[in-house]
Structures are given as C-alpha cells and as structure tokens.
Image (tube, rainbow, N blue to C red):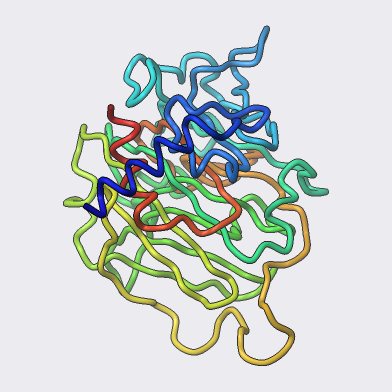
Amino acid sequence: MRRLLVLGVTAAFCIGLAAPAHATFGAVLPTLARDLVSYYDFEHPVRGDKALEQDRGRSGTTLSLINGGAGMRVRDGVSSRTSLQLRQINPSVAGNDDWKAGLYRESGVPSLRAFSGTREASIMGWVKMTGQNPAPNSNTADPSDLYGAIGLAGVLTGSSDGHAVRALLELIQVDGELKLVALARRLDGGASQTFAADQPWQELLPQNEWVFLAASFDFDTGAMVLYRNGEPLKGRYVVAGDPWQLEGEPEPDLASPTDPRGFKIGGSYPQNTREHNTCNCRMDDLMFLDRVVRPWEVSLQHRWAKG
C-alpha cells in the first residue's frame, strides 16, 4: 500500500508540476527535477561544438568533454541513447590526454552558486566499469604503480586546485583497501569526512554492468548516505572527531559561502594541467542537487530511469 501511495504521488507530480527551465521529466523523477542544479544525460551537445554538453538542470552550466571531445559520446545509454566514455589514453607517459569531463574557473563558477553556503547536497548517476581500475599511475616511472583512487563525480570547493572537493562520489583507499565512498568538505581548506561502504567495491561495481550510485551530504548534521541501485549501503565514517567543525555556534552549519570552482568527472584537474585518478568507465544521467535526496526518491529514480 505504501509503495502504491508513493507511485501515486509521483504520478501527481508528473501531471501537476511544471519542469524547470532547462530540465526535463524524461529520465528524472518529478520530485527531483526542481532541485537539479545540474543534470547531464550526454544527449545534448552544444550546437556547433560536440565537445561541450548542455546542462539540463536549472543552472545551465556547460560541461567540457576533455581530450576526447565528441568521441567520448558512445551508444550505450541507460535511459538515453548515449553515455560518456572516460578512459586512460597512455598509461606509461605523464601527460594530459586522458578522457575526463568537468569545468574549472579559478574565480569560481557563478552558475553553481546554489552550492555556495549550502546546507545539503546530493550526487547521483549511472556508472559502468569498462577497463582496468584503478588505472596505472602515469605520474610515476614504475609501471606497476596504480592510482590510489578511481575518480567518479564531484563538486569542487571554492578554493580548489582541481582536486579538492566540497562533495564527491569516488573510490579511494581506506585503511589500505579501495572502497566506494561519499566524501565531503564543509569548509574550504578544511578537513574532509568520508563515509565508506563495507562491501568490496568489485561487488558494488562489477565490470561491464550499469550501476546506479547516489550519495547525500548534510553539512549541518554531518550525515552522509551512500546508495547502490536504489538501496542504502552499510558503511562507516572514517574520520574520528569533528572534521567539519560542527560543534558550537553558529547554527545551522553550512558549506563555505564561495562559488565552487567547477565539477570533476572521471578524474581530477578539469583544467587539464595533469592526470590523476583516471576512471576507465562510462557514465550517464549525472545529477547534482542542492538538497539531500530522500531514500524513496533514490529507489524510485533507479526504477524510473530503467523504464
């Protein structure tokens, strides 16, 4: 009965709500559409430049497909015809040719102001592993050296060098073991907190299988939640104490009041000054929201996109 009620509410939203200026209900649950700061389905290249992707969210923040351009669009979408291919090009040479996506502006990106002083945030999207992960570390001479992380999708801080994030979905080393994590930093230049999934990452992201991931971040309470295919994952907070400095006044606790310097997708440094934490994978339907998604919304979004 409860599931029928939720589906009924969702259907009512479809009929009764107007979509944001840039968003479409096509592959997006209606209750999420109004809160999409940015949404990329990799079906909407900028006219005249297929190396740029239009934002279907309310911010209109254009995304750059770095190094691979139009060739990064592949016929293998989840709810659409195409997805984004990310990959390492030359593992043995330090360079800047890996395929990744994002944008970077040292003065901050004004269109992403919704994440300035935000109380909450969420990141969601589909991921398919398509090659060796973690990738060989092209910044060292040792051919056996692998990156210590696999970059997925994140919002940069207002002081980021292209690596530091305000909110992030990624795989990183936790106590010597690679883990799927939600990671966030409330204050620019401050300490981060990590919520790491208990389950082995290879089980969560098997090769050549589309998986729907989501992470929510509450900068006031310190709560983070990870989801896989619509279900919350068991895990633990990695950093002890109060890394976000939540104790005491003022309340509520918010992120730094600075415009993020951009997004990073499939690896760090979207300004393309170096390679780091490359992901050999595909992504589709990437969503960045300025609120915490509800568990039932994540579950319904997973099913909504599939059919």
